[in-house]
Length: 159
Image (tube, rainbow, N blue to C red):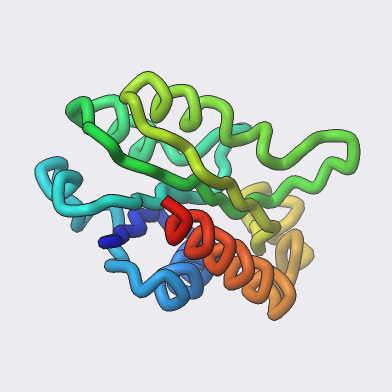
């Protein structure tokens, strides 16, 4: 199964770290969003889409990329993200809703989702104290990403 991981990582490389761990475990081709062209979709059976979370959804360029994609056939996808917020009463996968709906509208089959916290200095108050979620993603987050990739690998072997 040929796999691609497409990510948008901007401020601290949080999402790129997670994407790199997943790509290694899935033996996937890793692409910064700016380097992936729409016509390349047909070359892959499994595609991962990820970015940081901005105002409770994925990066606007990733969302636009999905909006502009042609309808695929028989493609499985997974979604991942890094985020600043930790709200114990809110499921962090809730931030995936907009991207998830766009992928479903394009007839993709979503086979997994992953999210972890990442360093954020977006808001001035966080910059003043060196950031929120210092040291994230950490070893445990990277291990969780590795485990998620291994679960995806097992799921796709069964098909």
